[in-house]
Image 1 (cartoon, rainbow, N blue to C red):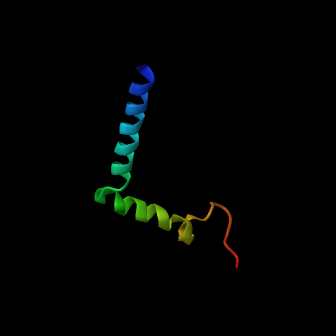
Image 2: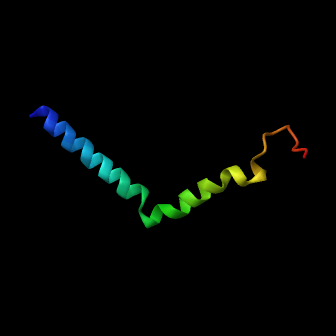
Image 3: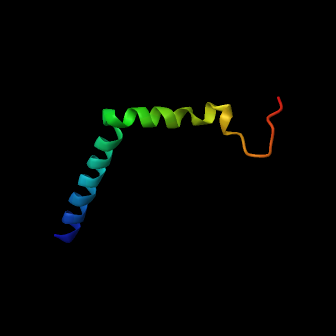
Length: 51
C-alpha cells in the first residue's frame, strides 16, 4: 500500500517537472542558458582571452 502511494507521488512529481520544463514560459530562460557557453563575455576575471 505504502509503496503504491510513493510510486504515485513520484510519478506525479515527474509529470509536474516535465510540464514545468516544457512550458512556453520557460523557453526564453532555457534558450538564454543554452547560449551561455558560446558567449565570450563570461571570461574569468584577470585572465585575457588570447587566440
